[in-house]
Structure formats: C-alpha cells, structure tokens
Image (cartoon, rainbow, N blue to C red; front, side):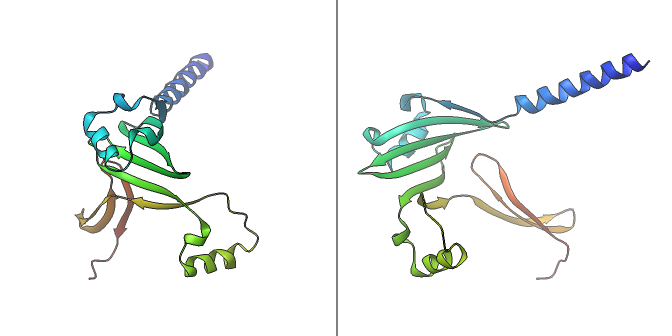
Length: 159
C-alpha cells in the first residue's frame, strides 16, 4: 500500500511539474520578416529595419508578444507588441541628466551612492477597466495580449 501511495504521489508530482513547465515563458529569436505583417507595419512606424538589432517572439501562458530591440545613433529603443500589432510598451534609452529635476533630486536623496548603469524612458499601453463583479467594484488593466494586471477589488461601494 505504501509503495502504491509513493508511486501515486510521484506521478502527481511529475504531472504538476510537467504542467508548470509546459506553461513556462519561451523566448525565441526570429527574423523581422517572420513577424506577422501587422506587427511589421507597427514596428516600422517607430524604427527603420536597418536599426533593428534583435527580434524576439515571447510565448507565455498562451499569450504571444514580440520584442524588438534597436539602436539609432547610440540610443536604444525597444518596442513590445501584441500579435495584432498593438504597442504594449516603448522603451527609449535616456540619461540621468534628462530626468526632471524633481526625479533627479528624489533619486539622489533615496540612493545617495548610486552608480547608474542605465536609464530608460518607458511608456506602457493598456486598457483601464472599471465595473462591478459579484456585487463588488473592480478595477484592473488589460493588455492587448489579454493579460490582466493590477486587479483591485473594493469592499465598499462608496463613490
């Protein structure tokens, strides 16, 4: 009986591990021309193909997105896009001196001995959703990939 229980537990553990592993994030470097046409068109609004350094397909828990890294005149620009060509995030290389004075002061105050390796100006795109679910007010962000972030449920119905 103990052998059967151990075997059952081992089988359950293996199945759980395999399920988790099969849902793991996969990253694959691809060529620009392997992107869907709608994604290529979106990319070309921001970057010329000559400036593209890396194109990556990222598959994570059933969603697919693309990340394009570029370099123009020594400045990086990275774009993340959904399968439908919608921009999820833009990252532009920057420098500490380009931050607003208030931001510089706060960084220096909180991290007086920091040696900065990189500064990026990041723009993230999402849809903000508010509504009522199960009698409670909910508020969250949904990306063009279908990923939901920042789920918040309010206990009160106060407005």
